[in-house]
Each structure stands twice: as C-alpha cells, then as structure tokens.
Length: 86
Image (cartoon, rainbow, N blue to C red; front, top):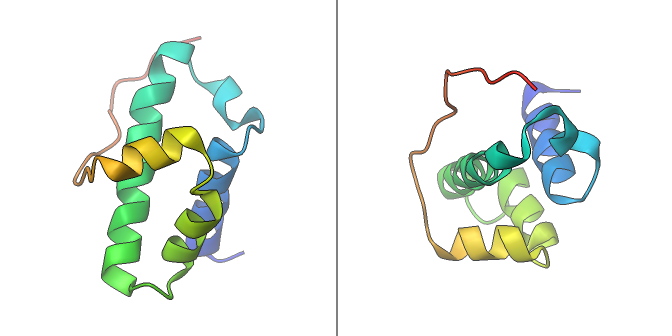
C-alpha cells in the first residue's frame, strides 16, 4: 500500500468506529480528530476535488464529528510531540 493510501486508510479507521482510537487516551481523541481533519483538508485543497483525500471526506461526511470539525475550516494543526502513557 502506498504511503498516501496508508495515511488515508488510517484516517478512515479513526472516523469509522474501528479500534483505532483504543491506542489513545479518551482525552486525546478530540485533538487527534482535529489534526486528522486538518490533514484531510490540506490534502483535498492541494490536490483538488477529485483527490483521494476529497473522496474520503465525501465518504465520511455522514460522521457527525468529522462534519462538525470540517465546518470549522481548521488548518495547520500538527500532532503533539508529547507522549502520554495509557
């Protein structure tokens, strides 16, 4: 799987109720969601409406959390370098 497809698959798993969130503390879920959405926004903006990132957003727009974060139009968020043990 290419690096891009792997990253998109990880973002899909985050918003589709899989066990992707189990590796993170519940208090960290919202910040992680915000970063996932801003990364998707950057990909969709850079590569256009036919891009894999834009297609993934269209597929996931039914997810209430993603839709709400997408509507905020956040950009430029990054992952925290701080590690929090579970």
